Amino acid sequence: MHESRDVGSKPTARAIKACGRQERASLRRIQPARRDEKSSRSPRDADEEAKAIPPPAPPTCAAPCQHSQLRLDMSTGSPGDLCRLLFPPLRGFALRKSIPSATGAIRQRELAFVQQELPARTNGSAPTTPALARDSLHTKMEQLEEQLLSKILTLQKERQAASTDRSQQQHNIEKELNSLQNRVTELEHGPPGYSPPDAFKVTIPVQNNYMYARMKKSLPELYAFTICMWLKSKALAGLGTPFSYSVPSQANEIVLLEWGTNPLELLINDKVAQLPLSLKDKAWHHVCVAWTTRDGKWSAYQDGEQRGAGENLASWHAIKPQGVIILGQEQDTLGGRFDATQAFVGELAQFGVWDHMLAPAEILGLANCTSHLQGNVIQWDDQAVEVFGGASKGGFTACEEGRKA
Image 1 (cartoon, rainbow, N blue to C red):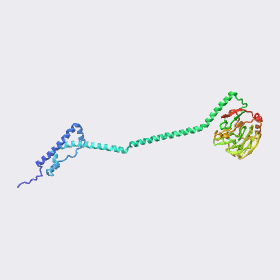
Image 2: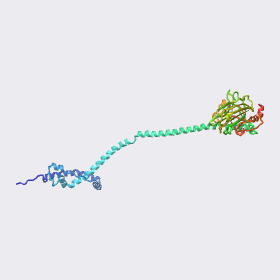
Image 3: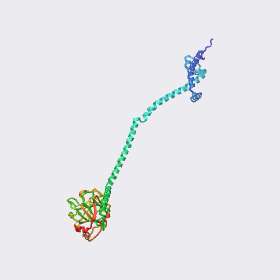
């Protein structure tokens, strides 16, 4: 009997030769790449790279072996085992050479991808050139607006300061001009010899809004007063304003005024009492007005005689302190804003203020020159009176001037 054999139990010579040819063909394809890589890389770099990357499982030559219908018993191994047994050196060398090439190709592809994605992301996250220019222009405009606003505020402050100082500057200029005029007069006629120091008068020759005299001293808070003076009016119509006292909160704190065809009036805190006095005969007259806050009682005297009296004139009002006393002009604001139609034209002298109501006998003594009573708040003194705008000072003796009139 013939012993039966399984033709698939052992590899045939033809199958082994086929696998050998396949491995040698693979070797011929790999060797040129190996020579090129050796020329550009050092052996040390290749060894380090091979050690760093573990080689994957080598390919089996199952396909050629299966193509040749090679059959192996499961107990002896698989077609892949046969290939590993036949060509172990070729398998390891081919894998070590193909892995770095594949790794380099992957890195090149990643680099190209990053180069493509980076500009797109940059353009999406960063502002474009027109946007940057617009932001810069907006910032500059804001800076210019801040500078402009600061300049406007500075100009407003300077304007306010200039407006506040304007009256003071005008006052200083007029004071200097008057000083020069007085100096010229003194050089022409010699120094005035006022003796006593109250023996002078103030002359305002023309009706305008810039000639006046100013008392250097102000008033304290008063609950009563008496104001007396000598005056000679040269006005054709109303007497004008012989004197006015203004405070910051009230321009008409105390005013003696005759305007146009209206009668002579005494104003206290802008309240009015009409005085029955007649002073437009171009002669010297002695005038006194007295007032008390109690029930607002007042009285008016001409040439030592009481001509009028009344009450309820600014009752219980206190005369405010630290104001400005002007002779010859009515004040619409503190120390200024004069009206030419309300100006006094003529001569003034012996202006005095007391902090109480003088008795009728005391007023008569002042009028007929039998008493030389000085005001205990404001005294008539050459050093206490300033003249402005062309107003001038001259010698005056009350009773002699009165008799001449």
